Length: 335
Image (cartoon, rainbow, N blue to C red):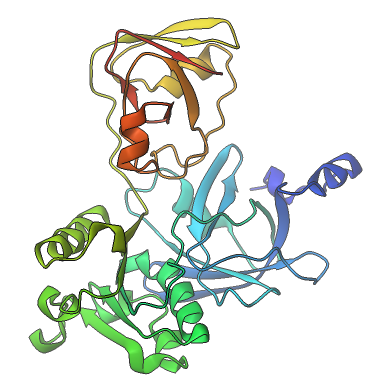
């Protein structure tokens, strides 16, 4: 099946894409299975040159199908400029993103991506680090491990998976220069090798980085809090957030667009505004990436995103219309 991302790019589009921050067309140079239901993609520039730099923990937006964009973490060494590497898990509950990648992305194909963004950076200090990955959460932490090793910062990477065959990038980790710092944990393995919070989180002097399914993140972060880890040194990356559109109806006003609409239960603010002709940029549609973040001029949002900090949510100056709702009967947004 053909896709617009594989179509020839016009001269006007090429000129537009030369802008700083504009999307990139890249080629899939290599596709390989790195674990059961997980593929690794190596992306390179069309001209064979350097790609924009990125920092450990960064991700890129990927156009996975016409009108469908998803975010995937960069998992290679940030010092590399000749390629980006992604790991994509086929999610049985896929909303179309991972399924499209697994079915349709092939070596040689040209795809469109956004430039790297980082909402999950490494701390600037040289405190030791504990990296805890659950499942496909290994991807940003793999990049972090490369960066920490390069700068000589001590770290331990706990790689947790349901089984050895589902442990993405396990062979790469075993062959890496930092292999002695990697601990592998499989749910179906011998009890002695299973992930244990008391062992992993015993030393609270450093930084803790956690990525994986929501339940896994909650398990680790609650365990860290119970063991005295300071909240400011516990860092998380959410791959998926539960999105609920339950709640009473309310009115949302797009001030600059001059549009007022009702948002019923079961519909998002973004959906209601887009249907009314208001341009709302969307990407993850789960309150993770911040693409749709808009200023609030009046009213009180009910924040349901994972993008803003608790302090930013308390200020009520911005909201994510893809998932958040309103506590007030009327919400005025600067769109």
